[in-house]
Amino acid sequence: NSDVNHIHVFPRKDFTGLGAPMSMMPWLKETRKLRPDLALDFQGLLRSAFIARVSGAKQVFGMSDGREGSRFFYSRTAKVNRREHAVERYLKLAELAGAQIGDALRCPLPTGDPLPRFDEFPPFILLHPFARGNGKSLTNRVIEEICLAFAPTRVVVVGKTNRVIDVAENCVELTNQTSLLQLVRLIRVARFIISVDSGPMHIAAAVNERLLSIHTWTNPRRVGPYNSDAWIWKHGKIVRVSELENTKLKRHGRPFKTKDIPSIVELIRPLVPIDPMLA
Image (cartoon, rainbow, N blue to C red; front, side, top):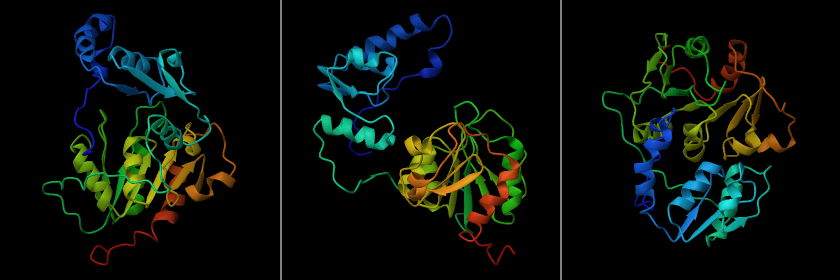
């Protein structure tokens, strides 16, 4: 993002265990040197609000649905509806900071970096099956069965994982092998994207309308793809985002299973026909 000129990384993995308080001290010391005029807390948690205050910001703005006592640290609070989509809530916080919000949103994402030795033709389906949330990630068996269901079309599997995946012949296994910019490129050129509820899903929603977002316990109305042309899956039901408002969904869903694969093949195959050279 050309509007960002500095990134202050929070090294989450370094701050675990009993020694976390002591290991955080050098990082907090550097954080105090930032001293911005304004800090915006989009996460709305105690940790993020505390970091915003520790930064020495003259003012800290947050949202009215902030949790864990985070609102105690705010100088001003944006009034939001907690049932709205996260993007809508974030825009209200941006408005509080002085931003002018128009009818159309612009997502200035880079074009991305091509992967070396990866041929973008013939067309492929991009599968991102991993997420940090409990129960969000697809199982190895589901991943393998998805690949087999779309054969001979290539299915490119990406994401961060410690698991070893047995891949089908038509599967291109690129887990732990792509940079963020390379992932953006793959998302842009993929003929269709299947992703669990995750960061890459939101990138896909911004640059490619051919997206299916898989939700287990998360609410797609609040954290699903912010793209009316995308689709979501929840508890065995596939719905276009534009139709979500009038669709009844189970609040607590279930994991995506092998029995759900035929329904996504029925959705995606007409949009990603088998290449004649592979038939």
